[in-house]
Image (tube, rainbow, N blue to C red):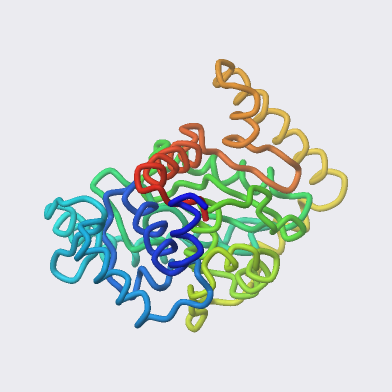
Length: 309
């Protein structure tokens, strides 16, 4: 048995705690003990057990504690940077709620969630508000195009408060790529509008909570249910049937063609992951953040001699 195998077998909670710290070290983001527990993959772990393992890791010099926060690097600057990002997030959340209600008025939108850094209550100075949007089947690309056109014309293509970069329809709620990154993004989604959409998303992605068995569902109290105003109903009726089908397929072909031209130097496998384009799924992550995060996470684990979760 190797040293790594021994750690995983004899100290499953310690291994899981180190995995959690290693993941958030990618972002230089320290965690409170309760947060380490929430993101701990060991289903048998308890908050008391996690606290004991954190204390042991600090005593052994494998982790460091600053003002009630835990991290892998001996760098006290991580905590004030985190707190500054948390404070900035407090100011962005009301804006996100207003923008979500606005997005919900567009035709065929059935759910609006906040994703990305804000969903984790963290906003750096250069962060955008990222939205994850659920649409009606067969109208995803039409809904997406209407939102993007609005952003380009009326917001001068600004992403700051209106980054609509991930769409799924109600028949394709399950996230295809199943790994620690997508699990983290899934469980931390913040429902803003369409309570039914969040409940359906959870049922379709229970695999994500297998990575994080202690992470609670987001509260849906105060999240508006799916409603359609008169104007939205009229637009959806006008864009139904043959016309809507043609427009949706046309929007998909034009968008995919533009992306293939713009990112023609990207590896085909990377393109399919970062710019996934299906009738029921649209992802626009050209920087391929997922690949970068998982690569750095793996490096952290190797340095710690800890197995992959």
